[in-house]
Amino acid sequence: MQTIFVMVKCELGRAYAVADAAVMEVEQVSEVHSISGQYDLLLKCYLPDGADIGHFVTEKIQTLAGIKDTFTLIAFKAFS
Image 1: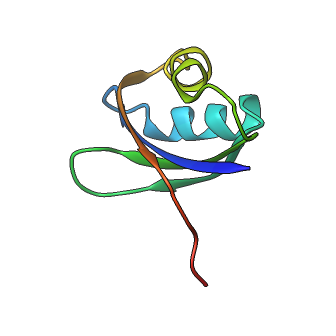
Image 2 (image 1 turned 90 degrees about the horizontal axis):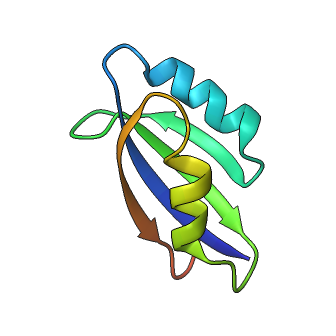
C-alpha cells in the first residue's frame, strides 16, 4: 500500500463541497483536512502498490467539481 497526500486548491466557496465529494466518491481517500495557506484541503489517500499515481490524481481527484489546482506529495515511510 502506498500513501500519498494531495493538496487541493478549490474554487471560492467550494471547499466544503469538494471535501464531501472526495470522501463520498473516491474510495482511496482516507481523510480530508481543511488547511490554511496556499491550498484549501489536504487529502490523505491510500493506493495499492504499483498503482499509477498520475492517473489516480488526474482521473479521480482533479475531475471533482470545484477543484482548481492540486499538489501531490508521496510518502516514503510513516513513523509512529
